[in-house]
Image (cartoon, rainbow, N blue to C red; front, side):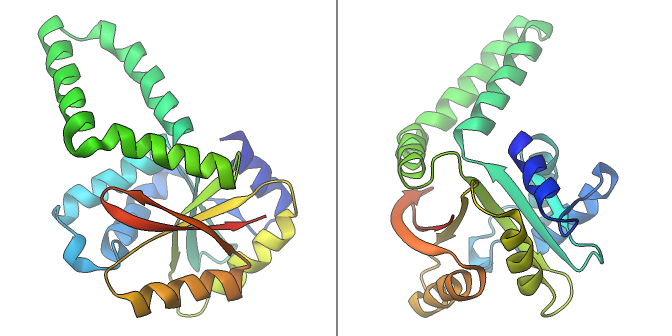
Length: 211
């Protein structure tokens, strides 16, 4: 996550890392906020919270402002986390019993093949590499106080300057008007632009990029 550290360093103090000890509380906020379409929340809250916490510890980086009024998470484009997970698995696997290694491998293989997840991953990787090479994904954005977050994020990204593209992935919710309103928010308030569409997890996804 060297590029995330570069973004924080360039932000003139407007972006600050959230300490690891606070990530469990942040994961609760994310579990209560996402997905925005609550009908898509299949897992119980505790499982969603644990999933967010694991992601924030291993893959993404959670940022906030000086006054802790909003949360922004940044992530490398998807292949970097995949490589990290593969390296961790390679390091841990020799320590596990043989039967457990086979069980985990079989479960992982079934998860990848079911629903063509591997092919969707490749499609997403290629599309993001095409429209925003070496981009950072704005994974989550939550205002903890009404109206506090949008101006902060716009100002902080302006301070970072050029050289690091930011990517926002806006999944289709089934409500075209709401999806259009979310896209306008990113475009008009944060300076993103519509560069393409793809699919992930069975959902259509709009790709927005801010250079």
